[in-house]
View (cartoon, rainbow, N blue to C red):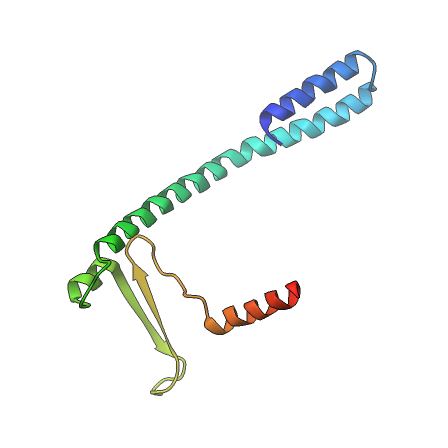
Length: 137
């Protein structure tokens, strides 16, 4: 509930108490609940502000990345300049089984401004599509 709504409810609660519509005990109990809720809301404000700031920063970074993408829409050849423009770093992890040429190996590619992201797994996406089709059928 918003702070304005809480203030309005608290005023109505006070009026109901003054007019005798609710008892003093009910008034105390409800006002304590409203006060607790207001304190919780006030305590959550800094965290919410941090989240808003992070989302604004993320939007700015995505916009910067899209600006780069627009610049290189029609790339004829993948050059080292293009790679350096898009990629900030590549992390190569150890193989699951050491000294095996066929063992899977994780490689993380960090793009400028947006970091790393995972492409949807085609087998997972196909399974989700099948489940959606079953639900709608």
